[in-house]
Image (cartoon, rainbow, N blue to C red; front, side, top):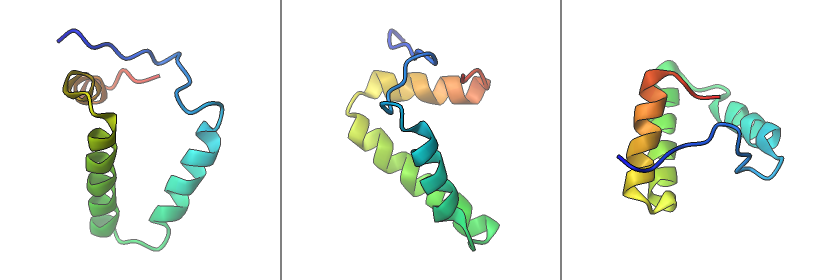
Length: 69
């Protein structure tokens, strides 16, 4: 796998807190199962928007290893 993720890179243009807040709000009032389903849909949408299979695989591996940020 040649794609690499840089946890120091701010790909959210300084708006990470806004995005995180929106994610928290999206989960408000959901059951654990509904929250997991929301996360799964969101992940699939974001991976599709990424349009880079190698980067998607690198992100999955990085998340699995727990070495993000």
